[in-house]
View (cartoon, rainbow, N blue to C red):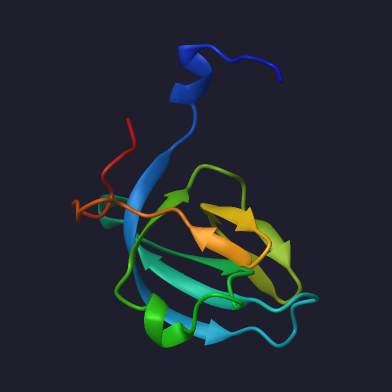
Length: 110
């Protein structure tokens, strides 16, 4: 694995946000949701995430998550994904990266 230097890490804008809305995404090739997140001063952004095996829309709304928000937008079928939702792939499904306690939306990971 290639090592990085601190300046590489500083380029990644990972921030906390709260999930506002979740919708099913039947057009996706693999089961996924459309997810809208409030990132505070960075605004509301949307993404597509394959987290349907472990989460329902009801268990996601209101949850605070970590998003990488400085990737270019990506077209996912008919949907524009504006950030990457962080999580860990397991045999049971993707487990979302979680915060130990709430922080203001838009707080940057350091």
